[in-house]
Image: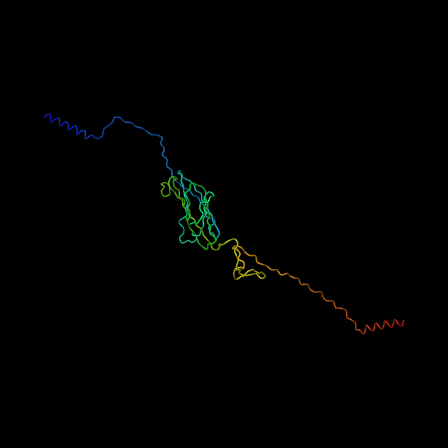
Length: 263
Protein backbone atom coordinates (compact mmCIF):
# COMPACT_ATOMS: atom_id res chain seq x y z
CA UNK A 1 0.00 0.00 0.00
CA UNK A 2 2.82 2.32 0.80
CA UNK A 3 4.55 1.47 -2.50
CA UNK A 4 1.41 2.25 -4.53
CA UNK A 5 1.00 5.69 -2.96
CA UNK A 6 4.61 6.63 -3.59
CA UNK A 7 4.38 5.64 -7.25
CA UNK A 8 1.21 7.67 -7.70
CA UNK A 9 2.89 10.75 -6.20
CA UNK A 10 5.86 10.50 -8.54
CA UNK A 11 3.63 10.19 -11.61
CA UNK A 12 1.58 13.20 -10.53
CA UNK A 13 4.70 15.37 -10.19
CA UNK A 14 6.01 14.33 -13.60
CA UNK A 15 2.66 15.09 -15.22
CA UNK A 16 2.48 18.51 -13.58
CA UNK A 17 5.96 19.48 -14.79
CA UNK A 18 5.26 18.45 -18.38
CA UNK A 19 2.14 20.61 -18.60
CA UNK A 20 3.79 23.87 -17.51
CA UNK A 21 3.06 26.66 -20.09
CA UNK A 22 3.43 30.42 -19.57
CA UNK A 23 5.10 31.59 -16.43
CA UNK A 24 4.99 34.99 -14.84
CA UNK A 25 8.22 36.81 -14.06
CA UNK A 26 8.48 39.52 -11.51
CA UNK A 27 11.71 40.93 -13.05
CA UNK A 28 11.24 43.33 -16.04
CA UNK A 29 12.78 46.46 -17.66
CA UNK A 30 11.60 49.04 -20.25
CA UNK A 31 13.88 51.28 -22.44
CA UNK A 32 12.58 54.19 -24.55
CA UNK A 33 14.08 55.86 -27.68
CA UNK A 34 12.82 59.42 -28.11
CA UNK A 35 13.19 62.28 -30.62
CA UNK A 36 13.39 59.98 -33.66
CA UNK A 37 12.90 61.38 -37.23
CA UNK A 38 11.99 59.38 -40.32
CA UNK A 39 12.62 61.07 -43.69
CA UNK A 40 11.69 59.93 -47.20
CA UNK A 41 13.12 61.24 -50.50
CA UNK A 42 12.99 60.50 -54.20
CA UNK A 43 15.24 60.36 -57.25
CA UNK A 44 13.81 63.04 -59.54
CA UNK A 45 15.35 63.96 -62.90
CA UNK A 46 14.42 67.33 -64.39
CA UNK A 47 14.99 68.25 -68.07
CA UNK A 48 14.07 71.53 -69.77
CA UNK A 49 14.62 71.80 -73.53
CA UNK A 50 14.01 74.17 -76.42
CA UNK A 51 12.67 73.21 -79.84
CA UNK A 52 14.91 72.56 -82.83
CA UNK A 53 15.39 75.80 -84.76
CA UNK A 54 14.85 75.96 -87.64
CA UNK A 55 12.45 73.03 -87.82
CA UNK A 56 12.91 72.70 -91.60
CA UNK A 57 16.30 72.26 -93.27
CA UNK A 58 17.70 71.58 -96.72
CA UNK A 59 20.77 69.77 -97.98
CA UNK A 60 23.90 71.24 -96.39
CA UNK A 61 21.95 73.00 -93.62
CA UNK A 62 21.68 72.33 -89.86
CA UNK A 63 19.36 72.90 -86.89
CA UNK A 64 20.04 73.15 -83.15
CA UNK A 65 18.39 72.73 -79.76
CA UNK A 66 19.55 72.91 -76.12
CA UNK A 67 18.55 70.94 -73.04
CA UNK A 68 19.40 71.45 -69.35
CA UNK A 69 19.50 68.61 -66.78
CA UNK A 70 18.77 69.24 -63.07
CA UNK A 71 18.44 67.14 -59.88
CA UNK A 72 14.99 67.90 -58.45
CA UNK A 73 15.11 65.21 -55.72
CA UNK A 74 17.30 64.25 -52.78
CA UNK A 75 19.26 61.34 -54.28
CA UNK A 76 22.36 61.83 -56.41
CA UNK A 77 22.15 60.13 -59.77
CA UNK A 78 23.99 59.35 -62.97
CA UNK A 79 22.21 59.48 -66.33
CA UNK A 80 22.52 58.92 -70.07
CA UNK A 81 20.78 60.24 -73.20
CA UNK A 82 19.69 58.27 -76.24
CA UNK A 83 17.68 58.78 -79.43
CA UNK A 84 14.94 56.28 -80.23
CA UNK A 85 11.35 55.81 -81.42
CA UNK A 86 12.13 56.98 -84.97
CA UNK A 87 9.49 57.38 -87.67
CA UNK A 88 8.86 54.23 -89.65
CA UNK A 89 10.00 54.30 -93.30
CA UNK A 90 11.49 57.79 -92.87
CA UNK A 91 14.54 58.01 -95.12
CA UNK A 92 15.35 61.41 -93.67
CA UNK A 93 16.04 59.91 -90.22
CA UNK A 94 18.71 57.62 -91.70
CA UNK A 95 20.56 60.55 -93.33
CA UNK A 96 20.69 63.01 -90.43
CA UNK A 97 24.04 63.63 -88.69
CA UNK A 98 24.30 64.61 -85.00
CA UNK A 99 26.91 66.42 -82.95
CA UNK A 100 26.07 66.33 -79.21
CA UNK A 101 28.04 68.44 -76.72
CA UNK A 102 27.82 68.66 -72.91
CA UNK A 103 29.13 71.82 -71.30
CA UNK A 104 31.04 72.64 -74.50
CA UNK A 105 32.75 69.24 -74.84
CA UNK A 106 31.90 66.82 -77.65
CA UNK A 107 30.15 63.68 -76.43
CA UNK A 108 28.95 62.17 -79.72
CA UNK A 109 29.57 62.66 -83.46
CA UNK A 110 27.75 60.36 -85.88
CA UNK A 111 24.37 59.36 -87.27
CA UNK A 112 21.37 60.48 -85.24
CA UNK A 113 19.76 57.03 -85.23
CA UNK A 114 22.81 55.52 -83.44
CA UNK A 115 23.08 58.09 -80.65
CA UNK A 116 23.58 56.89 -77.07
CA UNK A 117 25.70 58.87 -74.61
CA UNK A 118 27.87 57.35 -71.88
CA UNK A 119 26.67 57.69 -68.28
CA UNK A 120 27.57 60.99 -66.62
CA UNK A 121 26.86 62.95 -63.43
CA UNK A 122 27.29 66.37 -65.07
CA UNK A 123 24.00 68.23 -64.66
CA UNK A 124 24.47 71.10 -67.07
CA UNK A 125 23.58 72.19 -70.58
CA UNK A 126 23.41 69.91 -73.62
CA UNK A 127 23.53 71.15 -77.22
CA UNK A 128 22.30 69.01 -80.12
CA UNK A 129 23.20 70.03 -83.69
CA UNK A 130 21.56 68.01 -86.47
CA UNK A 131 22.57 68.48 -90.11
CA UNK A 132 21.71 67.08 -93.54
CA UNK A 133 24.90 66.21 -95.49
CA UNK A 134 25.44 67.91 -98.86
CA UNK A 135 25.89 64.60 -100.73
CA UNK A 136 22.39 63.21 -100.10
CA UNK A 137 19.24 63.60 -102.14
CA UNK A 138 15.96 64.00 -100.27
CA UNK A 139 12.62 65.56 -101.02
CA UNK A 140 9.86 66.71 -98.73
CA UNK A 141 10.13 64.41 -95.70
CA UNK A 142 9.83 64.46 -91.89
CA UNK A 143 11.72 62.67 -89.13
CA UNK A 144 10.01 62.15 -85.75
CA UNK A 145 12.11 60.85 -82.86
CA UNK A 146 12.55 61.01 -79.07
CA UNK A 147 15.49 62.08 -76.93
CA UNK A 148 15.26 59.98 -73.74
CA UNK A 149 17.11 60.97 -70.56
CA UNK A 150 17.51 58.04 -68.08
CA UNK A 151 18.72 58.58 -64.49
CA UNK A 152 19.59 56.00 -61.80
CA UNK A 153 21.52 55.68 -58.50
CA UNK A 154 25.24 56.35 -58.60
CA UNK A 155 26.06 53.08 -56.79
CA UNK A 156 24.13 50.91 -59.27
CA UNK A 157 25.65 49.67 -62.51
CA UNK A 158 22.72 50.29 -64.87
CA UNK A 159 19.33 51.94 -65.22
CA UNK A 160 17.54 48.59 -65.42
CA UNK A 161 19.04 47.32 -62.13
CA UNK A 162 18.42 50.43 -60.08
CA UNK A 163 15.67 50.49 -57.46
CA UNK A 164 15.41 54.28 -57.66
CA UNK A 165 15.30 55.61 -61.23
CA UNK A 166 13.59 58.23 -63.38
CA UNK A 167 13.35 59.15 -67.07
CA UNK A 168 12.26 62.10 -69.19
CA UNK A 169 11.30 61.95 -72.90
CA UNK A 170 11.59 64.91 -75.29
CA UNK A 171 9.69 64.53 -78.58
CA UNK A 172 11.17 66.09 -81.73
CA UNK A 173 10.30 66.65 -85.40
CA UNK A 174 12.66 67.75 -88.19
CA UNK A 175 11.53 68.30 -91.79
CA UNK A 176 13.35 68.61 -95.08
CA UNK A 177 12.16 70.62 -98.06
CA UNK A 178 13.41 70.23 -101.61
CA UNK A 179 12.74 73.92 -102.26
CA UNK A 180 15.50 74.90 -99.84
CA UNK A 181 17.95 72.30 -101.11
CA UNK A 182 21.40 73.63 -101.85
CA UNK A 183 24.86 72.17 -102.28
CA UNK A 184 26.91 75.25 -101.48
CA UNK A 185 26.63 79.04 -101.44
CA UNK A 186 27.64 79.02 -105.14
CA UNK A 187 26.36 76.58 -107.75
CA UNK A 188 28.07 75.55 -110.99
CA UNK A 189 26.07 76.79 -113.95
CA UNK A 190 26.93 74.39 -116.78
CA UNK A 191 23.77 74.65 -118.82
CA UNK A 192 22.45 78.23 -118.95
CA UNK A 193 18.91 78.55 -120.14
CA UNK A 194 19.79 81.43 -122.44
CA UNK A 195 22.75 83.63 -123.28
CA UNK A 196 22.06 87.36 -123.45
CA UNK A 197 22.78 88.94 -126.82
CA UNK A 198 26.27 90.38 -126.95
CA UNK A 199 27.72 87.91 -124.36
CA UNK A 200 30.09 85.08 -125.16
CA UNK A 201 30.34 82.10 -122.75
CA UNK A 202 33.52 80.05 -122.76
CA UNK A 203 33.16 76.28 -123.19
CA UNK A 204 30.54 74.09 -124.77
CA UNK A 205 27.10 75.25 -123.65
CA UNK A 206 25.44 71.96 -124.54
CA UNK A 207 27.94 69.85 -122.60
CA UNK A 208 30.45 70.31 -119.81
CA UNK A 209 32.74 73.28 -119.59
CA UNK A 210 36.09 72.95 -121.36
CA UNK A 211 37.95 73.36 -118.08
CA UNK A 212 36.04 71.62 -115.29
CA UNK A 213 35.97 73.95 -112.28
CA UNK A 214 35.35 72.78 -108.74
CA UNK A 215 31.73 72.57 -107.65
CA UNK A 216 30.62 75.83 -106.23
CA UNK A 217 32.65 78.02 -108.65
CA UNK A 218 31.03 80.10 -111.36
CA UNK A 219 33.27 81.12 -114.22
CA UNK A 220 33.05 84.78 -115.12
CA UNK A 221 31.57 85.22 -118.61
CA UNK A 222 33.76 86.91 -121.22
CA UNK A 223 32.16 90.13 -122.37
CA UNK A 224 33.46 91.72 -125.56
CA UNK A 225 32.59 95.37 -126.07
CA UNK A 226 32.96 96.72 -129.61
CA UNK A 227 34.17 100.32 -129.81
CA UNK A 228 31.51 102.71 -130.96
CA UNK A 229 32.65 105.30 -133.55
CA UNK A 230 30.42 108.37 -133.57
CA UNK A 231 29.00 109.26 -136.96
CA UNK A 232 30.04 112.80 -138.07
CA UNK A 233 28.29 114.42 -140.98
CA UNK A 234 30.66 115.66 -143.75
CA UNK A 235 30.54 119.42 -144.41
CA UNK A 236 28.72 120.61 -147.49
CA UNK A 237 30.99 121.16 -150.51
CA UNK A 238 31.21 124.81 -151.72
CA UNK A 239 31.07 124.91 -155.54
CA UNK A 240 34.11 126.45 -157.23
CA UNK A 241 33.55 129.62 -159.29
CA UNK A 242 32.95 128.93 -162.98
CA UNK A 243 35.97 129.15 -165.28
CA UNK A 244 35.46 131.66 -168.13
CA UNK A 245 35.85 130.39 -171.69
CA UNK A 246 39.30 130.52 -173.29
CA UNK A 247 38.15 132.95 -176.02
CA UNK A 248 37.15 135.56 -173.43
CA UNK A 249 40.49 135.34 -171.61
CA UNK A 250 42.45 135.75 -174.91
CA UNK A 251 40.35 138.75 -175.98
CA UNK A 252 40.96 140.53 -172.67
CA UNK A 253 44.69 139.93 -172.94
CA UNK A 254 44.82 141.24 -176.57
CA UNK A 255 42.83 144.29 -175.56
CA UNK A 256 45.29 145.17 -172.81
CA UNK A 257 48.24 144.74 -175.15
CA UNK A 258 46.66 147.00 -177.88
CA UNK A 259 45.91 149.72 -175.40
CA UNK A 260 49.42 149.63 -174.17
CA UNK A 261 50.91 149.97 -177.69
CA UNK A 262 48.78 152.93 -178.63
CA UNK A 263 49.77 154.74 -175.53
